Length: 456
Image: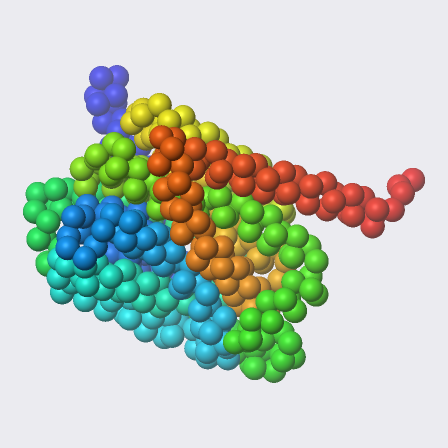
């Protein structure tokens, strides 16, 4: 009997873990919407593999290398553009927040999911030429422009449908499903490309089909208080609405100094992190000469597999504290990752590169939660989209600059025989941001203590 129990332990463990995601673990009023979202996010991440920076960067670097009219420097620039695609999409968040203001959120989101899937489907028609390489980059960027709207607006749906006591846990579960499915998709893409590069002709339409199914399922989500929320958005003061004018970002930051300090630290911290992706893609091919699958494992699959184990731990921590205090702890995971990347590249240690990638996944697990929910620690409900759009736009600004800056620094350092020193630069930026969060936490505690006054 003990041997039988031991033999069935893995199965029972999987069943136990999966059962924690079941809608019945939540209050009855939350189950229907959560179930719909859970099903949608079991399909949508497969489609997102077609615009995921690490996967598409590896595909671009290896598939289009050595083509006439596309020198190595130009190809590395294209890889940087792939890494910057998320940021370029994020820069349009103000536009999307403005367009969505006062509108029905769920049908709008479903339409954007379908548009992103269309971009992925079109990738099947990219020729293996210099033009095709830049066509692929353009489709990834366009896909992220559509998807940035989903990222910006879906937080309003979460806030309306899930109370504070359940929101972080639900968001963590949805994020866990998303990263696991995306990791599986990345693994399959890498394996398929190693078998036959021409598999992209049928692979991308298949990815897009999963996105279409996910969008249809998501269309069944009901937004609680939709009319009330739309009315509050339309009737709110003009200064409290999302705006196309970039000066609206300055207005929000000027009105909320705590949020401005948080965004400043995120700018330092995030710039360092955003330099890692494109340089890692280039280093894997130039320095380690990895296959498609190994490259995608390091850049995409390993971080995504690690994230589900990290997300519940980070979620419990975020539930207990303000996002500033959370970042003061969480930021050091990226500091550690930068140290490992530096050692792995300078000493040409592929196993350490995998360890660095795993540590990056631990950081991403907490970052996904804080990035989606952190602004809600500052924003009143009717300004949720406005604060989120500010966060997304500033992420876009640093994400537009950091990949190209990272590749330029890497190229200069690699020419001197020290390609791994790019990670000394990311380490310095990560440490500066982490210290900034510690200072903000100290100031917040001092402010809380002074406002509470002396006790008897």
